[in-house]
Length: 426
Ligand code: NIG
Ligand code: FE
Image 1: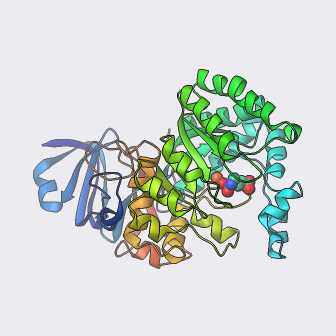
Image 2: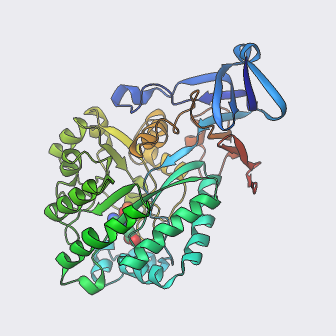
Image 3: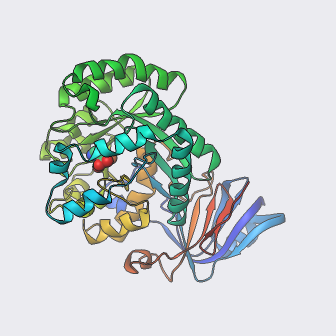
């Protein structure tokens, strides 16, 4: 008999997303469903998942345990959101309204709006303000089913404000049930003070900020915006090599607006992920397919920027790349904390199947963050991060649009959202 301190019994379906991870091509079609499923955990880790008959035989619930009746509910692993710009200040509704009148994201950036607006607001914000903003956003993420999230710096673009953003992320992580994984993205833009001296800023990143981030263990990943007018392939390679040398894992904002070859570079450098990929080339797809680098797709960006062009997901899956999904939550190109919405966009706009999208937002997303031993699937030994939907079956969570069907969320074996409301846990 296994002892448990929390159990959910008789769910209409438990979608486990289990099996070898990462999942490529055909494996993406299988979400490993258990009908009338039961799941139990002990001290935050899953100890049992299976049908009612084996639950009764194998599990003993300790006194004072939490036991949830699962009828009418469908359970999925908590979403893992592997790409967000979480610790920013200010919003950009003005810019959005101008875009609705016909201006493009890049035209606005050239006029000094875009990222620079958020850089100013983030520099002006105190660390405490950033922490409060992060906590509020983490609440929204949790209410929409995310239990693990990556967050990037990159709106400070100088020593003290990059460190401030990363410290805010670390403190928010300690104060909130959602797990926050940090990425240092000082190479998100060229700061206004360095516009004509990009090399001097690259030196500052490599010689001064990187070592400090490492010394205080403020980030696990390093990310660069490899794009025309931002960091070239050569500059990205130089930054990535320095970061690898310093012990960071790598992510690259690659081939978003122009096909510079960021995807190839990510694969060659053994990056954990290449993200965006709206303009990835066939060569880029080939290189990613032969690597362990995940292709993180951000369908909310094409949608939010109203771009005709989208990442070529059918080709990416056909060629057997590791496809994952993320929000890219940021105030300029994707103002959404909701992985549930991204899941729906992946199906409706990228034409992924429901199963492919679910695996990409859970198991493969966890792989892209090197957290697949802990999160992204419901399997014994992994964290009990479970989201329970008021739904008759799992396709319903994609099919039923514009509402939030999430009833309960369990994070690390604790009930943190009950009847759609956040419970403040100590
Ligand atoms: O991932 N592409 C670069 N960075 C963000 C946008 C940031 C912003 O507009 O503030 C992105 O889309
Ligand atoms: Fe991004």
